[in-house]
Length: 246
Image (cartoon, rainbow, N blue to C red):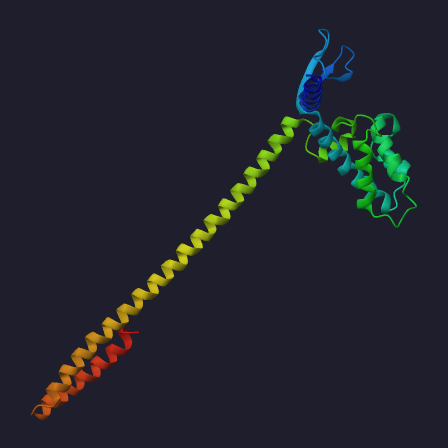
């Protein structure tokens, strides 16, 4: 029985760890933003509720850290100093502790030119997942970066992704429509060519039949005038056959 209770406690612990949590974004009377796992206080405004598994949210936020780290690392490798990078994003007073921590960590590799940018970025993500920069959120990053990722709002990002998928689907449909139009055009060309070939064959057969009748008539005993007339008819038919059956 004791063993069963222990197993049950472990199972409940695992379920609790993976349970779906909600993060509340609250705004107090001073306009300060507060993130909480519990509902906003009565004197606070609920700006939005971010639902989902905490591990997924952390991974998503570290995904933003990865993109930011790559931008900063490439800037560092191009010769931009740490101070200039901080100033580019609004100055030290306007940056969050998480952002400053990430920038400082990346610039600790400024002289390690043998370490590629991708490796520095990967190490930054590892530090992010280990909470070395605190609880990183998309809103911690500079406004310039947030514009680059479309939005830090989950619903807006999903809507942007949906619109992007729709545009891609429409492009595929357009390409498919163009292909079908080209296929139909090609099929029409083949059908027209086939019809024209049949017309030429029938035209030649018609004139060949008339010419054969004239040859038969010419083998008969005809007067000189009749033979001349048949010769003229033959020549005329041959000309028409050449001009019309081509």
